[in-house]
Image (cartoon, rainbow, N blue to C red; front, side, top):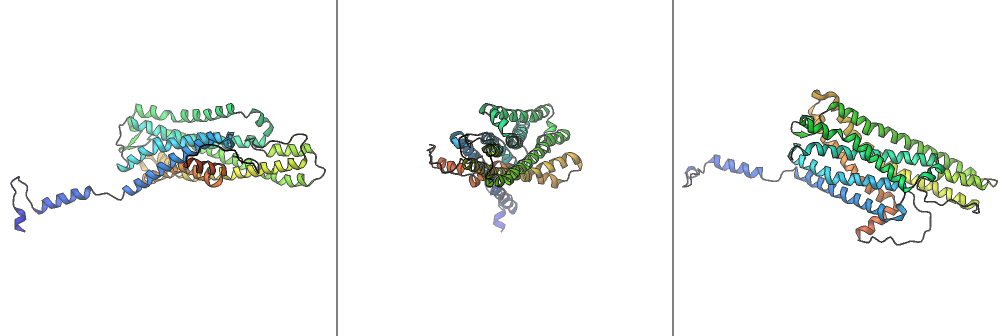
Length: 373
């Protein structure tokens, strides 16, 4: 061992300290277990972007999906795609640097702005869908007359405008005082009043509206379903009653063609049955979308509000939780395409064709009414 303590011509001493320091440097360069979560996050980002691109393509190409709700879902897919394209990568970089912000400081408020904008746009889209469906079922005749593509686009633009207005104070606050967007080197909003007001206006209030409208929609559908057997079994029911019931039960999509005055009562009852069936199917799928959004984003917003209220008294566990909960919320942006694939045949067939590079919408023999939603 004495031979190891000699000094070489280039003045490097081969003692124990030399080997110890070099071994420690080699250990620092070895991959750490944190790279596995990073690979998992990369997969989430890929499927979020790719899945929502498929949704946008399906609504743009498939004529069966050209209706108000699917236009809203397409706009929602744009917001979710941008989350995967602009928000998730910066968050991943922050994770790799132990939740510190390694990018230029000027990008921090812009990143928070985009993050809040797209999450606000998501809840606003779901809230608008709930309101639109309820109004369409509550006042179908008035709704069908005023429900055009142009008006649907105006509603979507309004949703984005509200989302931008609610998120715009973030870059203004951040550029004026960088301490408002940095906490111990972490890029996060540090203005308790804005967090409390913003979370209430941009999440909790729309969430309440969404849940109430969804409940009222289900209640009205249940009433129509309960009244249908009485009307269909009555031999003295007039054609006007059948048409009226059908109008009330037909959704905003207007995909079903109402029977004319020359149509039979049987056609009217079949149409009403199909309309109710389509509405129940649409309500089931959208209900799953609403429920998943709620359970995935509520933990983040509740924790965020607790941190804003407690401020300096917030424990380190809350900050660790919010880093986890924000990614649970991000995952919701990639879940919707999976839900559409599992529960809607039109989306499922379209996705399968696109993945095989077949984009033509070949007409098929219609054996049943077009699928609603």
